[in-house]
Length: 183
Image 1 (cartoon, rainbow, N blue to C red):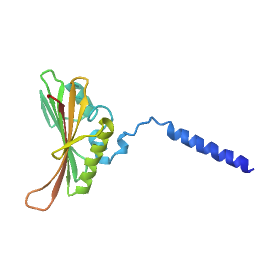
Image 2 (image 1 turned 180 degrees about the vertical axis):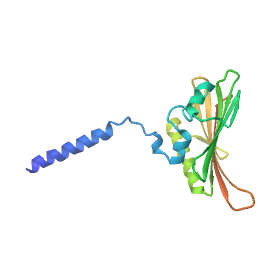
Image 3 (image 1 turned 180 degrees about the horizontal axis):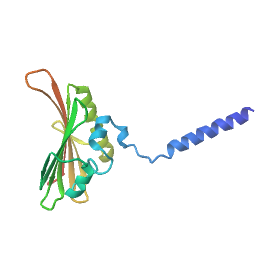
Image 4 (image 1 turned 120 degrees about the horizontal axis):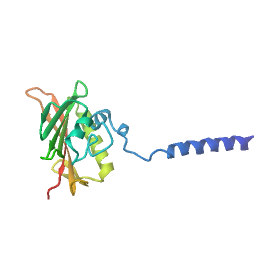
């Protein structure tokens, strides 16, 4: 009887470990990061929001899925409100052929320094897991990444906090800048 129970327990443990071990092996699902990070990134593909430097402007329209606040031949600008305290923007710059050459995004959070610190840490963890340890210099973390279109691109992540106007409200900002490395 005890032998039968032992075999069943061992079978259950074996099956459970197989189910856990049979995942896709990925530890970089967006759900592994905070809600704000998920809202900003939207998808796991590409270097940011499903896009890569060198992508064409038409494909980017499809991936954003929203109307740009500013739409020029070589520039797209989007603004998004996540909740009453949190918003972000994304600016895309394109070369004369309509290929993406730069991404600049800022996440803003009012009176939530712990929250914006958490968002910064989510971005830091995400890019570190994808591209290795960053180079830290002058308050910025950066990664040099091989690129299909460019020899190398840089991903720069910054964090700052500022006072708004004459009141004591603080505004936390996480900034992300992605561009070709033109050494």
